[in-house]
Image 1: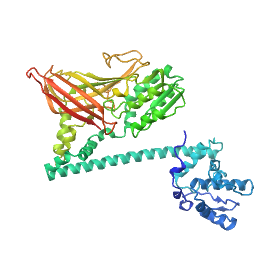
Image 2: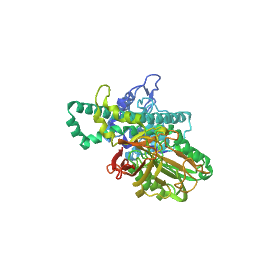
Image 3: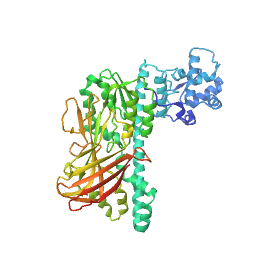
Image 4: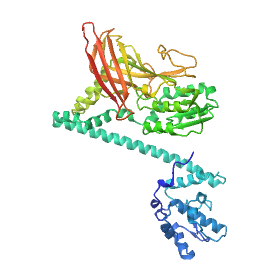
Length: 529
């Protein structure tokens, strides 16, 4: 693995010998650059070199504007010349200062380079440059120990960065939530008029949408790995089909933590190429389109691209781009087929908890928080008993043949109530299949139907829980139904114009009631952010 660090990332003014702190405990004396005299501190050594050997290191560093690594190279060059008893001449100083050969210590365990360094980050960078950029194999016990410390330090630094980013994200969300809650309480107390005015502004909608959709923006990697259905489905498909992975080239699009790549490698793949860029999905797509792989084609593409309501975050765009550019004829996609389904639910408890909770929050009226809920998609776990109609497919996604233009869609649906009760909202989820070839799953094929050589799972309420949960579209007005009541409608799903990661919905529906000759059609818009 190439180093992810470069010298340009660091400010040389931050790396000063006179800023270093001495560590407590045993400490090695530092050998002079030119003679055998020893010194306890770096500054003592440099003062001696200036007075007795006519070499002012600090002045040289300032005049030549040396960064931290150029200082390391210069020290090692001088030590090498002294060790070889050569006359110290510098015919081309810039060649020496930029030659990575001089990053390797001339003196094994030179305390001038390591003993007084208190910034572990700098030590890691130096060791990375020594053992990776120069490709030096450790041969001595000290080099082995330094390499071991490098790997441990890299791991600690990575974990620290991850924790820091998580804490920053959580703090930003908390701060936003506090601002929103205070703002809405204040608005209610001041006047209903001011609240209505603010509701009409795009600024208000942006803030409240952010709050209600923050549920879908927690740290997802840990949640995904703990999702047994999701992770074990990929693992089982790969391990149970080692014959098609053995000696094959596999591309993992959106590899995240790399767990799928590791499954493929363990199954015998000859090469696993992993691509990841998690901040903006459009950049992920560009990476897939522009990256130069070390091969012409790949045999298998694996990707865990599915989001809430299947299409949230638009990760499928990247998989399609990778398929069109890199997948060899007859190649395999895992998963190979997904299906989006729609039903209706009766869940008065969840409906009340979602809407009526804001009527009295520890004695405060927060009804202003209700407004965005009417248009916000809710991602939540729903019990299978809540389903009150049949389940219908609204979009099939055959991975081998689907195109990007087909990802925005409008689908008709007809739901029939299976009992008397109330419909509080529509509910969406998806099923997923893994096949050994490019076969499409026929529309008549149910997720519970077993197919030899095919692995599948559902994210619906009738299956085991997954991190995708279910997607709920709460109706502004619940529908009273009897067994056999028919609801006809269409669902329109498309990427948001403002952010292609997000989804915009429009659901049109009407209740077919024999008592009404002209049933009224209702239209409701929703947003998944």
